Amino acid sequence: MPLHPTVLWAQRQDLIYLTVQLMDITKPEINVKPESFHFKGQGEKEQQEYGADIEFYAPVDVERSKQHLTPRNLTMIIYKQKEEYWPRLQKGSKLNFVKVDFARWKDEDDSEEEAQDPMGGMDFSSLMSQAGNMGLPNMDDLPAGDDSSSDEEEEEDKSKVPQDDSKQA
Image 1 (spheres, rainbow, N blue to C red):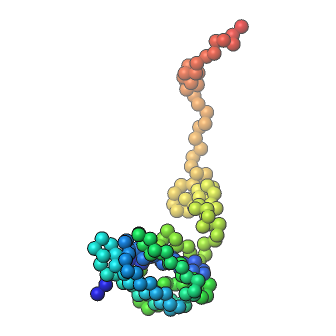
Image 2: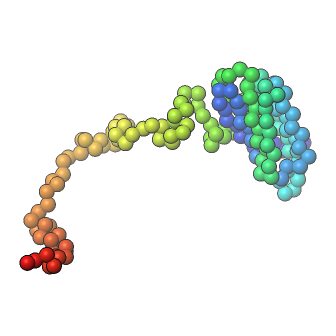
Image 3: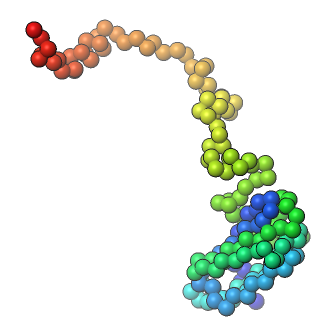
């Protein structure tokens, strides 16, 4: 019985990213059908037999789908027949070898701007107001400090600054 490789997945409205994490794949059998994905091959140093079968949540477009086999993994871009977000990758129960690819994941409600701007367009003042909502003190609520310095501190500062004697007449 073949071992299961780890399979990472992420989605967009129109496609699925599927990555079979298996190094040094030899003798790969890759079969994408409108309703399923099949992988079989040997991999890793020991060249053991690996296999994965996934029945998709909804139909995919086999003709537009692409694959890229490298020494590190197999990456697939599988286009959906309907542009919609899926609640999960597979029909039926959860598969233990299927994991979320957080590096590529994008939620349905994420805008294109947020994908390009890692801070999501957030400015510092809104970040600070959120900090106040989390029970952290708001900068506006902190007691006002005394910005004036004492006479002694001013004298110390003046003594540290070198005087320019060349301008004296």
